Length: 466
Length: 136
Image (cartoon, rainbow over all chains, first blue to last red; front, top):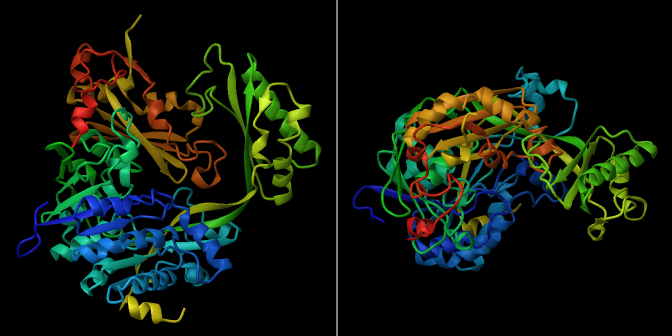
């Protein structure tokens, strides 16, 4: 990795968490095996915030990514020995201030009370939804165009996707740890890049380049060999997490630490570039509208791939926002069905189960019987193979009434004695009944959102009242 | 009978969710493969292959510099990650499933295979070359 001389020429930005639940050792392993300037940790999938919102309802000091505290503890030695290392993460979830206090206490106890923590807030719109709706903003569903007012369900979380600007501001003000709630995933990389290179916020080409780098690393090992069809021989058990070596012109090299498993090649990079995108000419972030169709990918040496040529235009006039609303209850159970007639038997057992729920007085709003192993994974694409002797029966249901789903959950076990022979797997017990939090993609005008940045030392955050 | 090949012989893919829509990025191993797919891997053909998902429509986007296409399968996820009853709530399997798509065989198949696999059975076997390419 090139060392910066006067002005930064290359900025190494890594990612070692692609979602809440990703490998807990990846961040420590990454900073132990490579010297990077920024370590980003991404924890907030579309629905993660709604789960964190429910945790905060029960405990005003909860609602952030708890995993992050374990990760941060594992990063203390690197924070001590690597003065260049900074951490940027959306681990704050629904409660960035509580996350900051907990992180600060941890760092303070570790003798890092001088470490500066910047906290970005302002994404949480929940309390302001009624006023914004009354002010004439309908929070239309981006897919269905239905206004939120027609939904008639309880909204449990509402968050705007903030951009990289408040992150850059926190870094400008000396933060080594930046904690945010909802920000666009790519913006976790754009913020550090703008801070490092001093780009203008209307330098669309460079912002586009950094956004592409951020998009490529945001899912962690998915660009270094994870999710790749040619997995044989890649030593994925020891997979290295990605590093984007970003240049001052906005182009980057995607790589991973030496001596780790996985691979970075044209194919892994191209796959991640097209992962979860819509129109590739308009990859929209709060920072820039990126055109992926001008990008070139060029393999350099082993596990080093250059990504160049992204172009950009001004971002949309609105921020994307995601809402979650309560949508009844859900349960799903599985049984193994064995024998020459396993597929017919599995279907019949699934229908028996649903018939018994009906007999008990519950017409379920939605239910599904799947035969896993007989083409259930992708409906309609695969046929049941000849000579199949076992299949997993999966029965799933959703309904507004908790009692209906509880009854559904209780109908799996009776199949052991009153269903066809050749069924196993009852030992896992009744499937859990869980509330459904459904996703409502929408937008909010930029001027209705004002990101806030608070910067203090760990010692100061730790002393702050909640 | 017309000769056919599996899409996975000349391209790889990645899929995921965007709310209730699924996306499948399909990437040819070579420029020649991209040219062939440009003609035969139409939105209609992908929609037919995934008819069981009951998508409302399928749209194809082109990324010629990357030898790639992005297919958007609208309303294909039965409610999406939060509401779908399916085991694959997020469409992660679609990348593998699209590889099963049967396409008219090109004249110059050898020019479309993954590097190092010209002699192998198309798109199937993985030789020991993976380790050499990926080791660091």
